[in-house]
Amino acid sequence: MRGRTAFLLASFAGMQLLNVNASAAEPVKLAYSEKLGVAVFAYPDDTGQWCRAKLGISILVKDDSPLLSQGLDSQLPKFGAMFAEKCPAAVSAAIAVYKASDRGLVGKSFSVAKADNWSRPAEGQTVPAPVPTTMAAPPAPVSTEAPPEPVACDHSPAAADYFIAACVARGLEFHRPTDGLDAARTRQADAAKTLHCTPQSMTKVTDMAMQASLRIVNSGAISALMDFADGMQVECRKAASDQLK
Image (tube, rainbow, N blue to C red; front, side, top):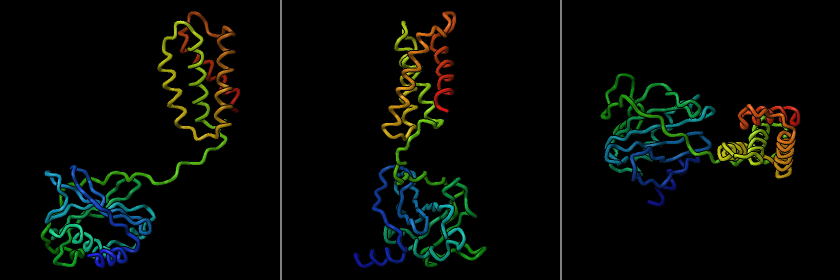
């Protein structure tokens, strides 16, 4: 068994096989290959079991995958060997191929059979497994890319949004009563999540927002007839436009 697994790994040209345990009725990732830009998913049935005689398979390919230009046919027997390795009960598989970028179906779905060495059947040839009328695209894979490096972002649009949110929240902290303060603090926290600033840049934007808020409150720019939170929003937006050029 160990030798066969090693053979499969070599045959997949870098495709990594995954240990799977379909305890929930969700697509199960069987294998993926960064080199080929492809991920293979199996769909459980109503009982939650993905391993059965007739498999439901989706193949997700990246836009730059060589399989889009060269075709899948050469890889199908290798996929089939992987199916048999992970699910000895499998005798056929209904397959749909999707692009990763827009989840668009590539060509038509089709079926392959173990008896045919998992090769695509000739046009018009019948196969044991009927192609399902619908097969959902697999879920978007979790990104494994590293988060962007922090930068000096005090002049970015995201920094302006954070500046305004922090300015308004600080103004409401000065104001009595503090209607809307909790919501303003939530907006500030949400805006901060969109920033990838260096600590120095983040401190600079925050300090500028605090100073602008204090000036606005002390200037009396907000009429007593206006809703204070709305007035702060207007004045803080002006301050951001002036100071984050």
